[in-house]
Amino acid sequence: MALQGPQPHNRATRENLQPRYSSRKPILGNDILQLWMERVRKLGVRNLWLTSAPRDGSEACSALAALARQGVERLLVIKLKSYAEMDLADLVRFHCESRSSVTEAHDARGQLGVSLLDKLALDRMGTERESSRAATDDGRPPYQFNGYAKRILSASERQELVGDVLTGACAMRPLGTQVREQVWIGEGVNLADSARVIGPTYIGAHTTVRAGATVGPFASVEHDCVVDCGTTVERSTVLPYTYLAPGLLIRQGLVDGGYLEDLNWGAVADLQPAGLGSRILQRKARKQAFSEAPVDVFSRAASAFACDFVPSSTTAQPWLQVQL
Amino acid sequence: MKTADRTILPFPGSSGTAGLRGLRKTLLDALRVSGPPVIVDLSSCGTLNHEDIDLLLECVAQVTGRDIHVLFVAGSRVTRVLLDVTRISSLAPVFNSVKEALAYPQVAAEKDSEARRASQTQGLWSA
View (tube, each protein chain N blue to C red):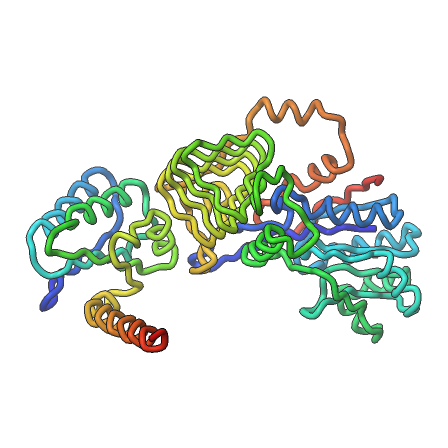
């Protein structure tokens, strides 16, 4: 079983100089990697390799071929490009019945980034660049998935998933306490008396919403953020450790630290020169709390992706083996 | 630059205290006298810092409640986003180009009449 975390976009146009989004960022407190790992665990798989690879998959392919040389007979490869409520056991069953060396999961929009590869296909990948090409060459029909699936490679796709989770259109649930209809709050949230929270909305753990601020509808403010006085966050996502200055209007955007990706204008703006937003340094105390906590599989997995927000590079991250 | 019924002022962004002081004086002087709308063109402004934002808000405050209008030309999507985020675009009209800004009253009038027509049609249907 191998999970590949794609590195973030690095759009080098004149107006979009900063990479803004990675599928490893939490979605309403949920980690997509953890959700996939839960599905893998249910499958009875105990060995897992994690890596962060360039989006073209070139280096990951050779790494997968190397796994075949180590004696791996069958490999389930999940690229973190989508959230899909898929029964992996059904995928394995389909793969066995079709007697194909490659089975790629598709939905109505195409590949979901989930595939099963037998040794034959893995050997072939040493010479082929893309697993998808290997699948096409095989000529077998893909595994057609008809359940809930959403791609999460862009800020707009992510915002669609946020909307679906908040309205109960899929099985994922926000990580927090539901305080009223379609409003979830994480632990340790500091909400000013005059702050307004309009559902459907999620406010992550240890986030502060100051006086006169408005969060929602369809907003997701992840953990450890500060929304300062009078600022409105609407139909938007604020990623962890982000500070938003007073009096702003964030509408249909994704804010990560000092950068805002505006979904309407398709532009990334640097909020820092004007003091409108910034990255909050992780508090020492919380860091210590994390380091003293028992090391579990997910924290190890998280550390494997610690560099997931650096601009895309050509070198793949080393594989990390995890026991489920 | 002055056209027949508009004053167009370039906004290069603040470059140092002296530059900012000069820019502020030019802008506020232009807005002090009643007359045709003043177009502040931010096309050549790479990014906006907090002094730029303060100055733009000061421009808006200067014309509030008076018979003079200030219009902004964003020039780029990034500047447009910053004007939206700071709510400046809800205080004064923002355009993508000087050409659009020059056509502003006509466009606004057309939009007004369209809206009026639409509401009248709705009224007829509800009646």
